[in-house]
Amino acid sequence: MSSIKLRVVVALSGLALACAAQAQQTAAPKKAAAKVDRVAAEFEKFNKMMAEASPAELFEAKGEELWKAKRGPKNASLEKCDLGLGPGVVKGAYVKMPRYFADAGQMMDAERRIVYCMVTLQGFKEADLAKKPFSNGAYVPAPVALVTYVAAQSRGMKIAVPQKHAMEREAYKIGEEIFNYRAGPWDFSCASCHGEDGKRIRTQNLPNLSKKEGANRAFQGWPGYRMTGGLMHTLQWRMNDCFRQQRFPEPGYASETIADLLTYMGVNANGNRYSGPGIKR
Ligand code: HEC
Image 1: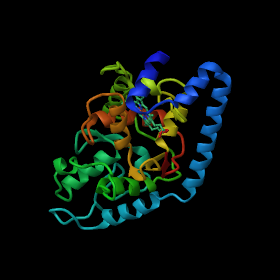
Image 2 (image 1 turned 90 degrees about the vertical axis):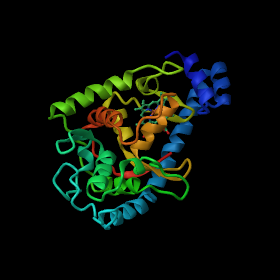
Image 3 (image 1 turned 135 degrees about the horizontal axis):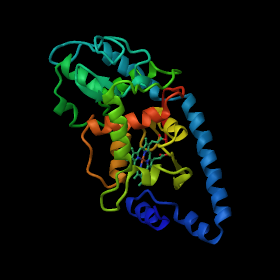
Image 4 (image 1 turned 180 degrees about the horizontal axis):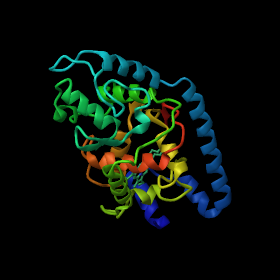
């Protein structure tokens, strides 16, 4: 993508490259770049400090409570939910999703699977769950807390998103295609922002999700407590927000498209240890 186009997007979308830094960069590119690097380094430090006292734990506890509580029209808990390792097995399940679930005949990421269990075991309606799926103010949707709980039970484990089943391999390919698919008013794809090393908007590094290191960075810390806004979010939200940044139509909540994209990203991150739910700027 040309830098002009990036600038247009950045300005219009309100993400904004710092105007001052931009002006400086034109005058003295090296100096400005060094300055941005220092700012980024400060943010890294701050992130580490915050992660040590992560508010994500509160949501983890809430999620555990919800997992075990009898809820919904069927007054059932989620303790029989099969996250891919057998009914009720939560430990290690998060780092092995998305995966193909034969009972549903679909690829499912953690959130999609949890929604599936809420519908099949507890009798909730998918359309209702899709109405307000993201944290907003004091409101925390049940799936957000549940995903946080489930993810926390994979802390320290190796990311191992499976590619055994033909559907899993297909999902990776489709995910890759979606990632590189350019469209919309600015002819952008995910790759426009996340397909090269060293891209950034203001002080935010945009990880290169097509490579192991960048994909790993994006896998880590989600679900995450976002300092911007002070809300707990899952990757489902992150995907949604990036579709918005890309000026694409909003994707369906817990949809196949998102499962495919997360398969692409997850497989690219395979082999790294998952540090657990955390904090994101
Ligand atoms: C216009 C630029 C832009 C486009 C296009 C875009 N994103 Fe993003 N993306 C961002 C920004 C900005 C962030 C936030 C970075 C931060 O806060 O550090 C981000 C963050 C992310 C993250 C989290 C990274 C992390 O470190 O946790 C993921 C994953 C992601 N995007 C995936 C996607 C996918 C998949 C697409 C295509 C559907 C996409 N993005 C399209 C700008 C973009």
